[in-house]
Length: 171
Ligand code: IMP
Ligand code: MG
Image 1 (cartoon, rainbow, N blue to C red):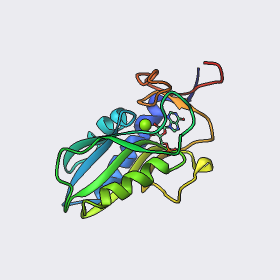
Image 2: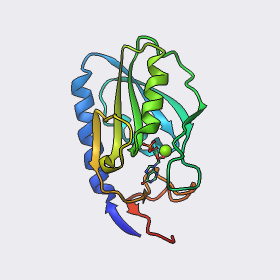
Image 3: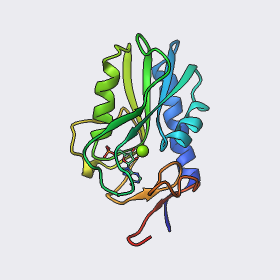
């Protein structure tokens, strides 16, 4: 597989986002809310680059299944376990593609009346967007290619690759 983003490039981008968040939320506590399973690596590396009081929680959604295309429907399959009311939430996602997942999550989470809600997405594929949504913190904008590694999967495989690679047709 061809490497699109090396582990060093990823680490540099994650450190940059961590510094920005540290600045933007100076003096405040934040909740890092990871979207399972894809964001697990990004959240764990990002959290260590943030110098603030931070707590973690996780949610899980189902959107893609074994296919490479979104079914358009998003379902919450694991909810948060901590109260969100009055918290500064940073929703941590692996990739912003059509935007349907994050649009659904934003709406669901806003119903809990957090103090604020921002989105950190490691990857952004703007050319694929179907919903009007943007991330507040983005690692990389990438072309319309299906990528795996660093948490991202195809049919649950390849999440453990340390680099982000392009999955070619037939693989
Ligand atoms: P969206 O709802 O279309 O924005 O899709 C977001 C979700 O689709 C992400 O959390 C990923 O799980 C998955 N996804 C989108 N593009 C890719 C990709 O290139 N590789 C792996 N998963 C992807
Ligand atoms: Mg995902």
